[in-house]
Image 1 (cartoon, rainbow over the protein chains, first blue to last red):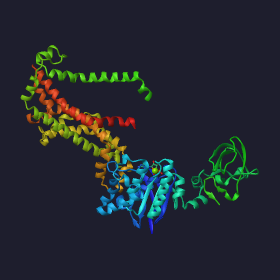
Image 2 (tube, each protein chain N blue to C red; image 1 turned 60 degrees about the horizontal axis):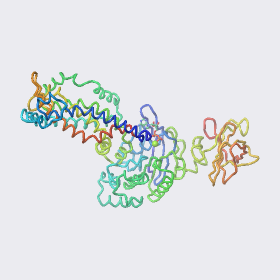
Image 3 (cartoon, rainbow over the protein chains, first blue to last red; image 1 turned 90 degrees about the vertical axis):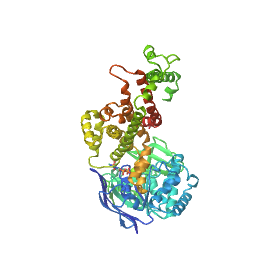
Image 4 (cartoon, chains in turn blue, red; image 1 turned 60 degrees about the vertical axis):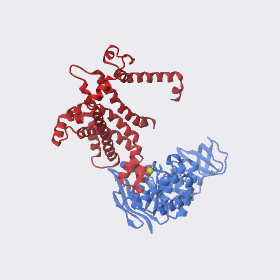
Length: 331
Length: 279
Ligand SMILES: Nc1ncnc2c1ncn2[C@@H]1O[C@H](COP(=O)(O)OP(=O)(O)O)[C@@H](O)[C@H]1O
Ligand SMILES: [Mg+2]
């Protein structure tokens, strides 16, 4: 069964057309990540799914039922916000139980769900604290707990990690992946961070300017991007683009090569001047200039490359991508 | 900023200026207070002297408490001020929430229309207001004053509160909606507590003009049983003789409730005024 299905969903704020003809199916138990640059409409799409904004046109079904006119609390969804949005006047227990009380659940059910969720998220010692007495990471866990206790058909996460510091972000990312495994629930997760998208998703939806650019599993998108935008957005460091004419004169296409596909070779076809070197121990990132184009090579292991040095880089022609000047993939 | 603060010379200068300002601001209040405890002769002979054993007298307070129904006036003022503040805050906050939270046709125009009242003094409409009050039979009732002061306070309240309400996190309100809270619960339980400092600011700005007003009580509710304190005190100011003891005593007592209300609101008020600057 499909947990969520969007058919030709559009959303305009006055004259501003923010979401354009979104079509999407989320299967039961699937972890779907919406990824795209800031301002591309990810949060708006999530709010339309949640019912916090009305779609201008199109159909939204959750669990097989059309939900366009259903209020947010009756859609069987739960949402985790970037700013946590905990109720400041309620303690952790109060925050987690409010929705259940509104639904009129019995005391024993409420108590049992709070127990389960707080155990799962290690929140037991904090149940009587107020949000202002918690650290950022703890608040985030309370926000997730508040979603879990409702046992929703669909979880919605809006950039839940972007207010956490780097170490905590990594841990929480793993926790969310574990949570998905334990609960087996359908989840939609919004982020502008391609690493989060690649590591968490069963299915990635790449958005740009309110349009779906491509939908697929992380490896499908990585290995087989539909266009230059998707190719450049996924992968870190991102794909190098330069006119194919540099390699073969007369070629007016744009060539794309991933940094990890470049290697040092004395007879390499690309000759570039190094402008910066990042030595990470396990990897060495070389940023170099190819005529006027900056390219990045990710070399495995440690290399004695210095700034200002001239290099020759080679690649396997099989690993190169080609795009036309409009950015569409050419095969 | 820290550097400026920690320099002792600057600290002294800053506190000096603040103390000077405090003295200037409190001086009239101080003069009223000390003179209210002196007999008539000493008030005129040495207005700046403190009351001593010779000049000390509570004749003013006695006159005030005996003549006229001072406690009734006091009660009227209190009822009018508190009720007006309550309605200004309630309706002001509701209108501000509607303007800042909901997108509807004419939202901008409505906001401008409500803000217009800030620039146009309500006294211009006195004649029309009086006619309306006569027509509805509200003349010489406290409701007449409460309604007028509510109308007078609303524009500024809507203006200030809607600005603060725009800053309340959308995520918080949306979290409430997803958890099934009604719009009213979201407004009263989530939004109002977060704009409490702004509410206190509005309350203080409205309280003093209402408490001190002479105009509308004189025109709309001059009857004995609806007189406010300010109006009641006027009996001591005659065309030919003024009972200064009584006037000063009445004024001294009139300051007290405002002072108490101010102390209640002041912590929130300071937060309201500085929150914009600090954030
Ligand atoms: N309430 C609104 N009114 C008008 N425009 C809005 C509103 N909410 C979002 N937008 C516009 O929609 C676009 C997408 O916003 P958003 O969904 O928040 O992007 P993202 O979450 O991907 O960063 C932005 O250009 C933003 O200006
Ligand atoms: Mg967003």
